[in-house]
Image (tube, rainbow over the protein chains, first blue to last red):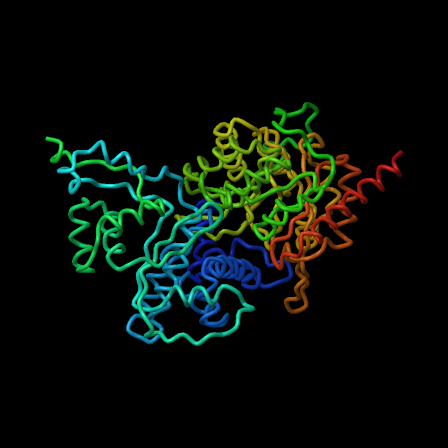
Length: 262
Length: 300
């Protein structure tokens, strides 16, 4: 007698690994060949995944067309099957999958568009946090400012691309939208994705701000982030950049490293 | 396995009953999908209750969750899970259960439901509702899992029968006997999906009315109604649960039989693919009410 676990493993092999041999003796034909019955479940598995991925990456689907998107989804699923009972997690690795698949080709920009679509979803689902109240900074002595670190708002995401991905994203928001030719060499983008009161917002931000926020998101001190920003933009003005960041609610609680306190 | 020793389908005593926190709806409701969020908030059509897929609203501060909280202020709500995979032999995902518990605490749903199925093995998820073999081992497994969830949520859950497209060869009991035993041993209720029952009965050649007659009347607390499609594979006709069409005439008839057996229960229209305008869903719910009222008139 097959245990429930073994039965589920055999079934899983038929669905995920195209290896139906072990489960076949355990399924009744009932007037139909067993493979056809298994195929119904394999189709469900594929169609469910495809549908969920298309909901997460509608712009990619519009850019490459439904047929190619279908192929991409199946290839992606073979390498990255769903690992959760919540289908909203399936696309996390999709931008990186596109880098691996299309990097170095003229479709290289698709992975950046996918990264923007994923950032949008993360922002939609991110936790709430109280944005930084600038007056809190007065509690810190000015000579410790460069040692400050900030918690990044969980619903804020940063996306950078060598391509004009924000424009690409905007003109592909609806099936009904007019086709527009976008020159892939017409500029790079540094984008902050944040959740506003009613909807997710996409802001193009200056190169220096992007470098500063990227460093802060990676838990760098304000001093190190400032150096990174100056490296990206020699005319970087930290005061103005912090004002913009505070205005957009990107930063939350400040904290000072132990070294600065001692 | 000998069916008689394991399963006790005819119970004279009621199983544990826990009253839901919210008042039970009297009229049919609809499955709420994100496409209709804004319309529902702005127009507030007269639907008595709504049911959502729990997983779509995980994440305490997510944008969808905020909308659902606003909707909850105006409508009764039920939480229908599709991802807990109760029948899987993989460990139950406590993170998933924790998210569900938080949602239950916040929204105080009328019903919390899941499925008589499994969907993951060794960490890979099909995100589909796969049939269980109706064996002693599977029963013990389901009883333990349902018990674990009910204990965690501190409330009763309803278990829904699924559509299936195959049967296993191992010695097993009929689904109704398995479900009745699950109710008996776990104290769960039943969400009877009339469309799923029709689909499985047609696919496997059993009598749906026998099914209705053999599950506990007091356990059945909610009905689901949805559309299905018929596919021909060679000479063989197989019904596939699609949730993408109007409720078929055969399923309306089975719904009438279910009401005769169990009395009126909150019914819900489900539609998940090719989702139509909200008005179509509401009209389908009104049709369910008319069917129920028609029977009542006959009975009176």
